[in-house]
Length: 163
Image 1 (cartoon, rainbow, N blue to C red):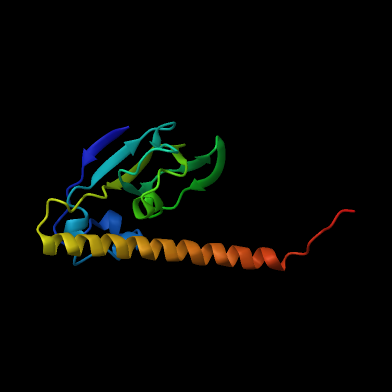
Image 2: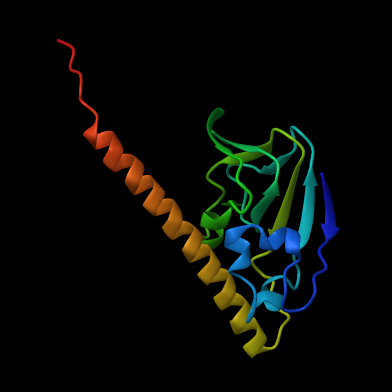
């Protein structure tokens, strides 16, 4: 795994990142503050990005590649779509990581540290934090809507009882 400084044009995302809908929404106020200390993380298959039980140090945005989520030694999910975020819950609730996330292919992630704005003046810090939390809230709302839709479909399925 290799971490590379992320440099961007102030107030804008590069065209390659604008193609990711969740990132395109970040253009404008607060973007520079949010990305002040961001880095790119290049991963190889088998690299562990997060480990279950570890403290939170950052959240990540998948730019390309495929990851798996492992909880209690069992694979429970795959992360494949550019723009999906990982590690945000620990950032918000200050609890240890709830699962391990591992690369199953070469992957590229944008790593955003929770303390990204600590060295900024109060107004820039406020804009950066507002951007980060608005972004995270939007991602969590989409996940909740997807989960609710899947649960509603599951409720429609006939139930089979065995006697």
